[in-house]
Length: 278
Image (cartoon, rainbow, N blue to C red; front, side):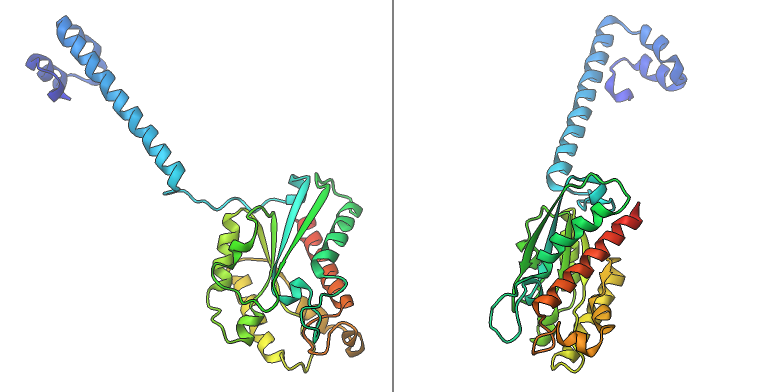
C-alpha cells in the first residue's frame, strides 16, 4: 500500500509496524495526507463495490458459473395445489387406433391418467396440498424424437412423461443421445421426468423394432437416473385373450381399453412413487 502515500516516513513506518498499530501511525500524518488517504480509501471501496455489483449482474443475466437446472427432487403433490403433467410422445400418446389413419380412440392414456391419479391420491392417508391436476397431451403420430423436440412443451410442467423413440427405430432415424438431450432440457425447465416404454403384442410385425426402442429407453432411464414406467412388462403378464382386447390389428397401437389400462398403470406408478417419497 506504500505507493498510495507521498509521505516516505509513513511508508517506512507502516511496513515496520504490526497491523494493530495502524491507527497510531496514521495519527502521525499531517492533515493533508490524512485527507488524501481517506479519499483514496473511499474511491477504492467504491471501485470494489461497483465491480462486485457488475459481476453479479453479469452472472444473473448470462448464467455463467450458475447451474440453471431447477430442483426437481420434491414431492409436487405435497408442495403444490395445482400440478401440471405433460405427456410427450408419438401415436400411443396421441391415442391413435391401429389401421384407421389418424382416428383417435375414445380414451387416451393422458385422459385416463387425469381421471385416475387424483382419485388415488385423495384415497390414501397422506396430507397433500394438491387439489387440481392438469394434463396436456403432446402426442404426435408418426413423429421421431430429435434433440430439440422438447421445445414443443410449455416449459411450465411439474411432471413430464416421455414415451418416444419407437419411430426412430422403425424409420431408421438417428436416436443416439436424443432422449438424454431432451431429458436435460426438460430438467432445466424444472420438471420431474419419467420414461415410459412400449407395450407390444407377442408376434407383432413391429416387435423387434419396439424391443430395440425399449432397450434404449431402459438404458437411458438407468444412466440418467430417471424412473421407468414399465408398460411392456405389465402387458406381457396378461393372457393372450386379454391382450387381444387391448391391442389393435398391428399389435402395437392400442384399443380404447388398452389406452385406459395404460393410463391406469401410469397413474398407479406415479401415486406409489410420490407416496413412498414422504
